[in-house]
Length: 329
Image (cartoon, rainbow, N blue to C red; front, top):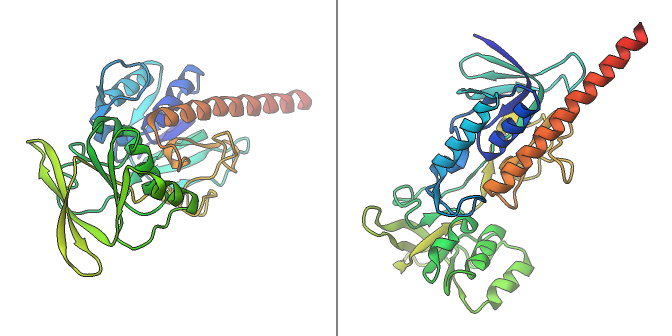
């Protein structure tokens, strides 16, 4: 069992965590990144990335995260492959205290500041073909992948705000968008429903659940969806070139329940326009605090903000401690 200490402890290693590490290292905070179960975050299970600034050609998600990690290490970040199983925020950023996290192997991580970049995972249906055809016609992010379906038929699965927003967004690329919902009414906000029903390129299929994704991952990818009517039990197929699962996301915030404020969906709450949580010295960035945008570039931006605020927090605490010493002299 080893104790690791740092001025900035970062939990999570996606674009938010890596950006925080780069800025924190350049500020002399000697950050430690605890990478978690999925080093590199969601981009490591993404194939083509076409919307990250700075690259003319399509790049690969795993490659992008390798580059971010290499840059973070180059400027002085320590990368540790561990998974945090418990965390203690009781010091609440007071002078002389540290935030403490424990890894699943028993190692202890202590930081003067804590940056939470644990991300969120898209919820999936868990039906046959979903894993095999992921990235080959099946996606959970229209903003990320809709561009690849220009002029093609696409389907969106779900009935809440996310599903309706995805369907509306996809009309920018596809002339034929189908929303498939297992019930006979949507849960989305009324204003979104009105926009959906008024759009000439969107049709809705009611009372249908997806049983499986059809197609060959080695030869052309997705070709359609196998459906079952939730009222009559009748089976059918729906041909499509792309399918977007839009049933929500689950932020990775289990560690922080009862310790940090969250919204009803489990996203960490921060001071508006900042990555600051209610506990001084604890910052949240990326998808763990962002239920709206959920993009690599926005995650990276909030990671930068977290590091800059962490640097200010450390500097202010050092200045306050220096004044106390001067007063005592």
